[in-house]
Length: 224
Image (cartoon, rainbow, N blue to C red; front, side):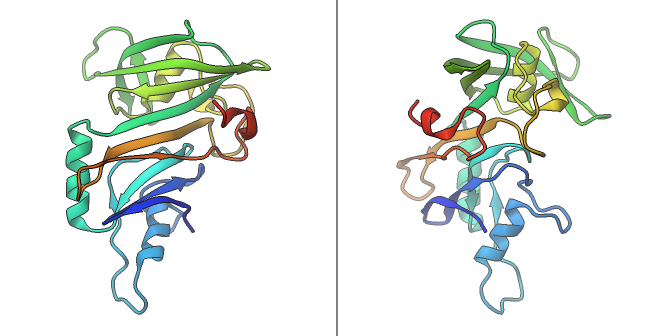
């Protein structure tokens, strides 16, 4: 099932668990498959409508908004495309970033061979500019908790940029982390998601609770 954090006319914000993909893929367990089952009417010939507005990587947890009808999907897509959505992530690394607070800017390209992003500090052919802001929230026992606010929405942006700056996310072995973590999970969490309500235009803000397996322990960190 899905843990629903907040609902409105035609949309739901769910708490995506790490370890499952967002979009339906064959018969694998995904957010989309779970939502279709949840929203399907009894004895209906077609599965319930699920509109994918944005995505979280399989290994990432946190707040994800889904549209329950096509008109809501269109409005939410327009809001996200116009950068009216607010996304705040929490990430845990076992190495510090250069400063306790700062901004990272890279040009990212996608490697078709290993399906990973590659970061460059200078413009490169086919590279897309990626920027994010970060600040250190907590340091404990060799772990560093950062708040990350991406200004762009590139493929694997946070994972790639933090690794390029010398601080890969805990558990993200694809980008250089050597610290053990839960299988198919990394310490990256979509903490806060904000967007205008598609019907009323009023601001919506949802905070997703941290997973129980969070590296720093949820009780202390939730107070940050």
